[in-house]
Image 1 (cartoon, rainbow, N blue to C red):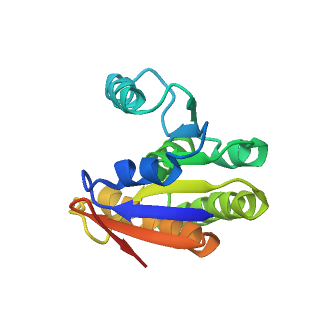
Image 2 (cartoon, rainbow, N blue to C red):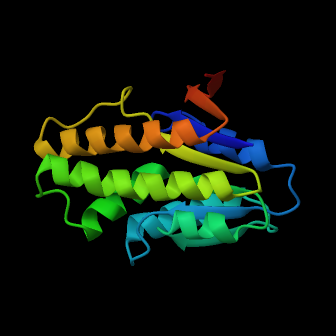
Length: 173
């Protein structure tokens, strides 16, 4: 089973994703995004760890494809939005031409989709649905929306199911 769980901020998507893998004796939880010393990031990861069983292993990395290729337990990836922003930061995509940014992100999505096709364990990926959220009206906000749309569409195509979570309610698409 490969499931993409999407929804707006504070929609309940992460909790839903955790429920999808809760019956597994152990889970690899991938905190996908910044692995640098950022107080907000540390606080977010700490809060999520409190909710999860002790049998879950946390990997703080942006190499989601690498984790999937090595996975021996179900994997929960949270969140593709932070995964994308780290890619964009490292490749300095915020100031590059939009077409260049789309190519870089498209390559990373292809790598992730290939890893999803190879993995033999269950995988649940969490992302923000940019079509439902307020996007700042500046270039970076529009670029983030467009790039996350590329991520979401590419990953959804590689998954068996997509779940949309709104106000804690789940709609299987």
